[in-house]
Length: 243
Image (tube, helix red, strand yellow):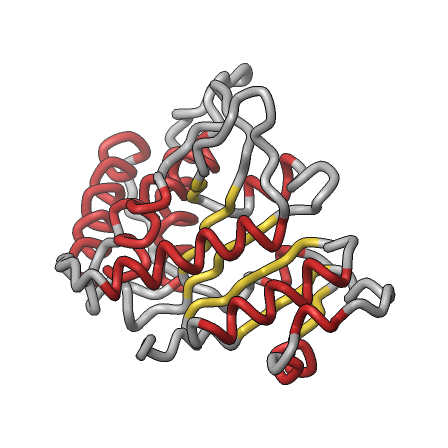
């Protein structure tokens, strides 16, 4: 029997079709996922019959005004995207995504899915440090929302069912601590004049992605603080506190 997946949130950004939301609830129930979050509102069209025997997931779904508030309490966030490109790198294949989720059984993880029409905006995508992509027909890469969620959920479940071993990281710091070390590193680099006026690199995105991929424990965070504090001392002549 599938294990409880209450620590994994399925987040739908402004879904248009209630049928998709109903189908998502049903596949979540099939594999013991319980936390459904919706940005915007639940579509009004009354075709929730697709949620057969899974109405409780719809009733318990939490509604948020924007993606930032929907992921505020999560420790790691992965966005699913059909778009590829220089500025939209893919960090995880579906099997790698499943392995990543299983490495962090003690943390709260969000899987984010965009609108049926145009997916996530650039600003929304930037809120998600990691991106996963399903390989599909290049001439028709857009996968139905409910089917995309089903593929992601099944990938997580099949990883578990196969008994695939992975090095779990139960001591990885939570999202708040990851945000703190991110802000510290960025502030140090800013104060020592590292950033130029005409940056071609999105350093916000790079730092968040790097830390999410690293999954540091508390000792690693301490060493990063120590390293960047020393850099700050060497350049400015004074240390920088860690708020």
